[in-house]
Image (tube, rainbow, N blue to C red):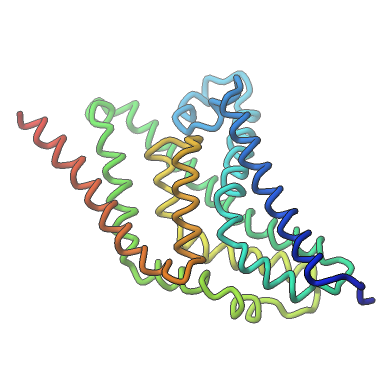
Length: 263
């Protein structure tokens, strides 16, 4: 591969500008989309109406497109350290931008698969609620259960194993980038990183279903939390306090509603 003459500083500025533009564009599209007549496709509460839609296939495509935009907006900032290391490694290659796109595509594809599974599970829960008078009148159980599940997961060994992998991007790239069959290898690198990222953050992402997918404020908050957890030197110490807060919120909902029922 013929080397390209390019300043490392200029290449880094271009990289940051392109990635920043991609993330910013994802947020902008979500903001415009949410205020449009099609904004309902960003909110998971509408999933139960798919069976009555004139075009359920189009509705599903729009939901998945919205989910992909959300994960791009929220999760790409969390993988910036890995992308920066990978950029330095392939900086002199003429196909470096294609390789970078393949890493990002592999990463987002894992989140897309998770989104399909999460949306399917959410649809099943909503269908069950519609056919269960008790569950329909006690919807708080679903929200409290989600908070308790997310809070409890913050203390598990799986959480910390995946988090530690995500917090060591250099060793991760060295482990998964072998420099042969480059394009498939780049896509595989993104997939492997996405798997550990989902393993680390899936429970926090489920909170989107509790507070409402498409809520830009919650998206910003959860995205910032996951970015700090994965990228800041002290980020690993956030997991336990976040877990305590989530467990406390879930317990308060249970206690409040139990008291209300008894009263």
